[in-house]
Length: 387
Image 1 (cartoon, rainbow, N blue to C red):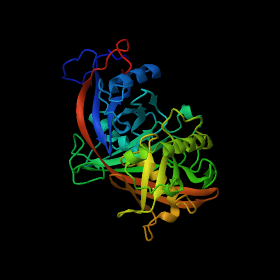
Image 2: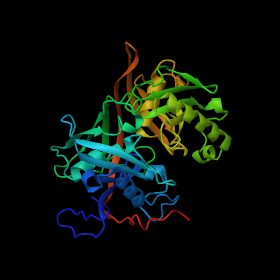
Image 3: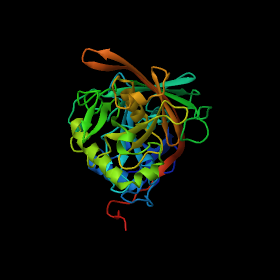
Image 4: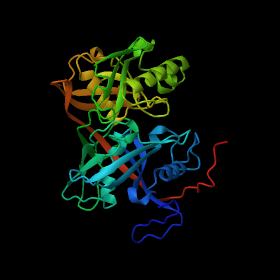
């Protein structure tokens, strides 16, 4: 299928060269959602099309529908699952704003929060009763790009349903999103080591890289946890302030490149993983203060699976920064302060024969349908590099 293919739901007027899509807010991210068979089968053709749809490469994404920020340049590709244990398959793609590169080397739990609703809207699965439960197989896990063969993980999304369509309105508020919406509960299964092959990819709870103690963890998102004070910073600075600190950013990137190889991710200079999260003493009502890089921009909040991974590292005895947790915090919950609020992650840690193991992981998000229709990308021949 090509960008020029006309795809239209029943009853809609055919739109020449349009590609059907839905724009949805999932958690604190915004993404463009596609049915898999409405995109090119060839990966290179698909990625080229998605970059043009977003308007990349261009820091403003002015000729596309991307929002000129990594948090709003995201894509979900959804299809009926071939696994009898899941309802739909979900592939997450991050479209680079400035470089136009399309990466499948990470997952996105925020975009995941709207996958179940999209699947019902498109008729990819069905539900009944006041609560829909959609089992979603996350296809980024075990991507061949990592060279690691691991089991793809499943998340169960539970949200209100009126018998015909998902319910988006509700009273649940999450930090970083104005107003309220319907609650979406996400429960994760077997996400430990989903990208790196192990919960602790280096085989150790902590490592020292260039004199800095870190914990490298993968409980759904490859993440490196570091103490902010080891860089001579407070850890509660505004994102723009941290991005403007060139010596700090260069040192952080050097550590990220080294950690990537140690975590079995190979050369990560052109990828968005591992994420780097600085932790420091809590400032407000949370258990810990965080600042996360994705990887070169400081996140305005914190990603869902990144939050789960950070919470996991902090709950493992001896994990980097665990001593900074607020005394008296609940044993299975971690409230992570971030630049725009607080994110609560639930993680149960137990002892296994070969080290720490994860029991349950879950979070609460909200989602909303923003737009449904056709997007009109320029042809590949007309796509231009930014001026």
